[in-house]
Image 1: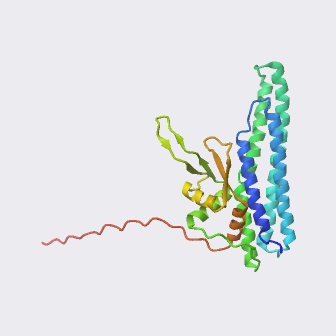
Image 2 (image 1 turned 45 degrees about the horizontal axis):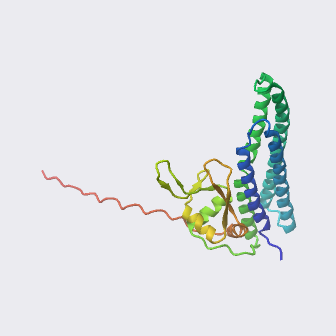
Image 3 (image 1 turned 45 degrees about the vertical axis):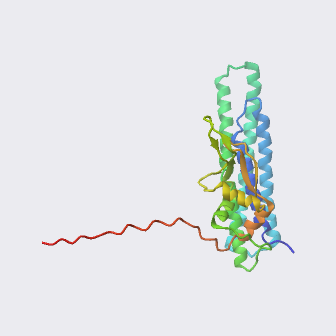
Length: 276
């Protein structure tokens, strides 16, 4: 039996691929001699993102969903994700070509760069910045598209094969933040004055998570950590295959209500009567 949620799970995997790609681009600007090769490698990775997005489109077609408006939106979003990755690859290819020429001139001239060389390096940096901008929102777009797909399939009577995990509101929110690539961790360390700094979770792009919640999801096999290339982050948190299946199966269902701390009761006011 085919899995109706398979395209959504593939989109969640694609979200993680986008996150890894974006992390790698953050530290891309190396020395002139090394950057051309690195840019070419990242361009190839961007093309692999495009192939993964195209695979999502094929998987949707294999499921033969009704051509409703939400399904049309999902197809369009998947095609857009593919095109963004291809455009990013083109910019990285251009940067690689420019940097290769700049690297050759630098070896000839040494440290004394001509104005033309500086302009070439600036053009290469602009291409890299454009490539970053094109894929920045990829993880969030993938998760949103996956949720639209599963929700619409539920509406038409087609349900995921797997049962969603029972999660608390904080776990549900954290799992979704992980899917969007918004959770990193920092290992425990010792401050300059000898103070012990405990391990902590870092919410990116406004996400709010705690290390306790991340550990609880890890213990259930829903998330895992991988070394991060970002400064001040020791690891980035990603969904496991079970995490992708569980999250995809939860789309379209009522989410557990978020708990908020109770506000203290207002202090009673007293009225004073005045007599004349």
